[in-house]
Length: 185
Image (cartoon, rainbow, N blue to C red):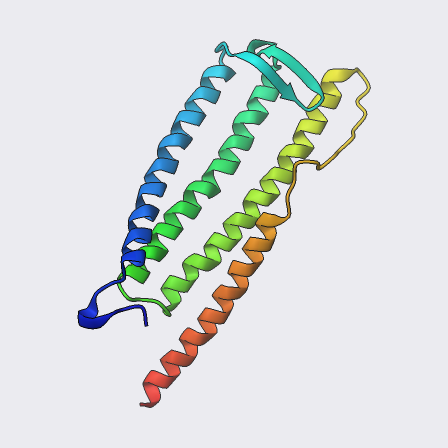
């Protein structure tokens, strides 16, 4: 379908395949840097600026409690892992498309995994908002008052995940029908 005369691969597919590989390695590099910075801050590193955790404002990262720094590391690791996996699976997906394997179950599985991982990022966002609200309530007083607000949560990720999941099911049914059709000819 996407191939042109003389089995040439369209430039857009070549470009997306190359960009997916570059984005994967870029994501890995940036993620490693972010994790090292957070680990540095966790063990007493200094960073000045306006820092906000929940309802608390700090001028220096050293003022933030160790538990808050640990939560930050855990939440960051939980968020970075699916992002790296999404770029990895998208790179594999584009490589299969580049090789002409459009409607094969292996190709479609990557779309399904990407949809699951997008949903997991959404859930990590909700979890992190909850943890920040718990931590800030314990830091404010001796008797914590839990007030969970999900102000920063967008529904775009689960909607996009749902769209990819539905598309993967549609394409997998098409792949099964293609396989049956190939067997009957």
